[in-house]
Image (cartoon, rainbow, N blue to C red; front, side, top):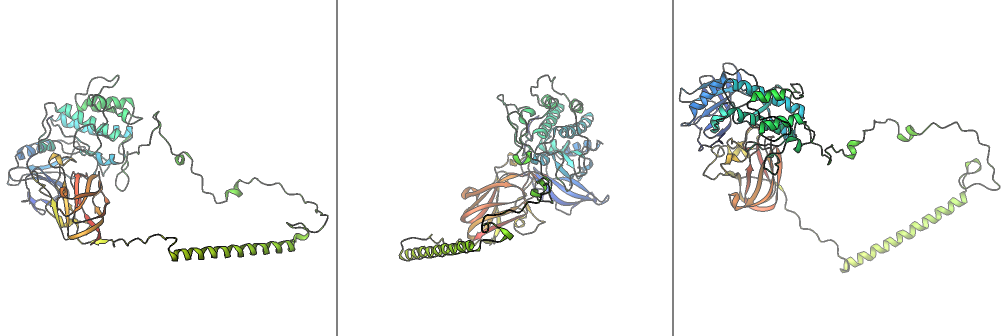
Length: 537
């Protein structure tokens, strides 16, 4: 399979939200944009349902090929494949209308750790059977990555992008069956280990490799993976497995082998409002491969007691026999004697002694205090120096927002809506276009959101709010240059959710968020809901 060849950036700004296609598809939200195609969330006003719509820039070179691939995919009836409802290139505005899929991608699920082996097998068997039906109809995917496999909010498995994604990315192959088998094997590898044995297209960490440069088998990466799943992965990816036969030659062969492996029944539990199913945390392991347990985890939790332990654990005491009266040869005992009385003269003496000791000690302490006071007054003993007050930290006003977006491959979406990154609205955001990988599809090394403060300020920290998902990476730059390359880096961090970067009291007019790796929240793109700068100035 030849790698995708990126096209020059093409603008699709001639189509705006609110546009209606074919008199029924209302474009509501621009989800992503890349390479001259734009992906929309839309509404089919006749059937009153959400749909996904793909539109194209004027002059997009592969419109006819995309529409042809979409029409071919529309003939497939397997519900585990994204359904295509409409496709047209006869007018001025070509489009493809398909099912709007909601849920979590395999990449999202693996953000918390790999799956249990039996659930990974069940998940990938569904995908393999779906691709088997597609190949039977003469269609291949060619671009399988962890974000093309979705666990839907309805509790089903769905493969997205069949046919269309390969045309958009320029992927071609002389051996489509083998390429899709390799894609299935790579996704099973990822589900079992949390690592990706393929190339670009995911933010998952790369699979560890052996001396020959090839990925290690799943069981060499994570303990407890059964040999039969090792064999399925090895036969799909061409890895050597003891006792395993030759490589699979089709998705059907992959599915047949996976069907013989013990699996958890589908569906799992619904994802809505809960932690994604089939995701387990990875315990630390001992050298022999067995899981370690912390001292706390190894001990059973004691039941809640309503009776103090001392009373609960004390054995019953036998009844006490009456003791005969004890006689003394004279006087009273100190601890209590006849009639329980005390030796009063002795107690009085002890009290007097204690009072004398307290009085003497208090006098000595007062003398020491006076002496130290005199020394301090004369400069003999120095107190701690008084620290200068820290500058008052408060929220700083951003004058306006700029963009560090150098050619030759300028981001065509990023210049829009820059002010939404600081408007304090929870529903609006600034975004970049959609890319085909966390590395910006190889088109650029990064992109910068530049906050012009209007004057020199001292930056204490910057808080950023973004959607949840797989994290990207971001650097905080502060200086007097509106370019990240011309200012100093103060802090770095994961670009996901709500996070804080430290300004370290750096001074400058420009505060720059320089994104070096794209997050993944449905698409490879940056979405910034809000940025707040704290400091003095």
